[in-house]
Length: 182
Length: 202
Image 1 (cartoon, chains in turn purple, green):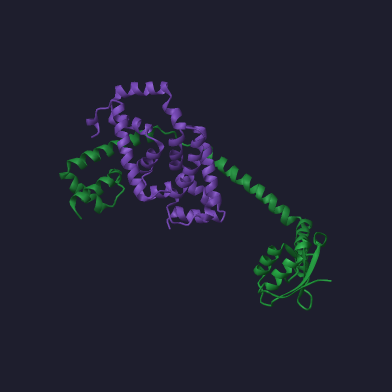
Image 2 (cartoon, chains in turn blue, yellow):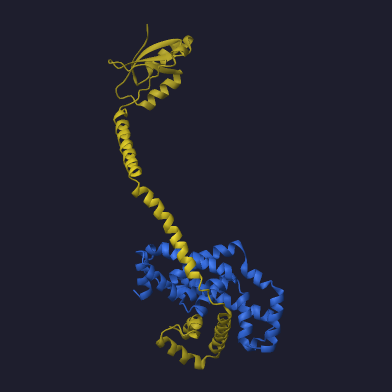
């Protein structure tokens, strides 16, 4: 049992200091995870509060079979997906034509492959993006991703494959020279 | 394992390799294979760009506000305060606790008497509320081994009902609606293999 898992055990007994320490260890990752979906400060903050409230209330249910962060991500994901069902935040972001024009201007000026890629990643459907988010942003293994998303390991691999195909398609539609990446 | 299958496996875990999320041994094996496999090199180049794209996204993400933690604590405390109020109401008000115990005690007593009064036994096939419908009555004794299903069948056949019995002698009184068919019905009853006796009642 690692330190964070021990903290959850202490939280289950009502230890507020353990809760504060767990928050300090995890809050940045959890915030990034939530914000990257909702793209809205206020909503991300509300979801953070709900997530950690659930951590406090559900600590007794934590069986220690996964990392603490994986468990918290699972809670955050459920709450975030419920919120997304209510309102399509990413759609709002993508249809914001003003900001897109500005992005394109910077894009031609900078002409960087990673910038094109970051744009393409933001356009990925949630189903594919969330797998890549967890690997590339939060450095989780396929097994951990499977646990958080509650899907089989092979589905994680399949989603990565389709995410790659989709990214290629998006980049092509953006008129990006494929030699820049492949 | 065939080399082509191994290449496919490596292709699947290249995102992890790109993020250095695999063990050293595996990483070294991949490095070695990568030197000779241009298709894998291209694949890795793609995932490296994805990694850089994410670094860009990550750098653009806002930092979480330091007000979030106090808000979480306030929510937790708010919930606990409500829970404590409920608990205090139950535990600190002696009259409530005492009342609750009395209520439970009464429920147990009521249940006890209810169970005591339950009628254990059997219900007969007889009925007492159809005497007015019947115009002719027949005394009947069924065989001891007669089954309820057979008795019901027979009663349906003669369109009759048991309106009395069983008496100590094993006698039942069967009422029939159609007086004109009394002889025919008596014949049916007498010929039945579950009947010992069938005689018109006085």
